Length: 96
Image 1 (cartoon, rainbow, N blue to C red):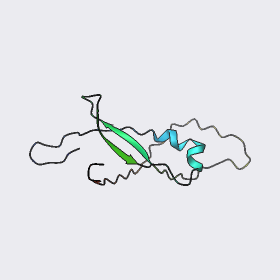
Image 2 (image 1 turned 45 degrees about the vertical axis):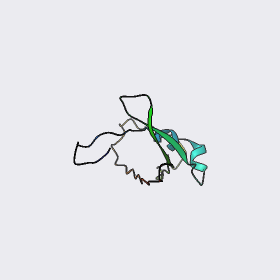
Image 3 (image 1 turned 90 degrees about the vertical axis):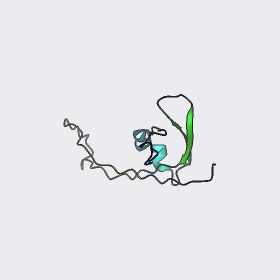
Image 4 (image 1 turned 135 degrees about the vertical axis):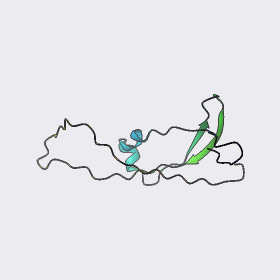
C-alpha cells in the first residue's frame, strides 16, 4: 500500500507465499541458513510485475505432541484457529 494523505491509500502490489509448503518440507526445515528469494509483486489490474522484493522466510516450529507408545493418534476435531505473526521489514535500496 502507498500510504498518503492526498489521494488515499492505494494498493501497489502483492505477492503470495505458501508457508505450508515450507512448514511441511523436511528439506526446508533442515536448512540452517534460509535462501534469499526474489519475488515479483503484482497488482490485480495487470499481469506485469509492479516491482520485486528480495526476502527470506524463516518459520519457527513449535514442538508437536506425539504419542508415548509410538501409536498413531487420529484427531477427529477440526483444526483450532491459531494466531500467527508475520514480520516484514522494507528497505529502500536506491532502485536496486
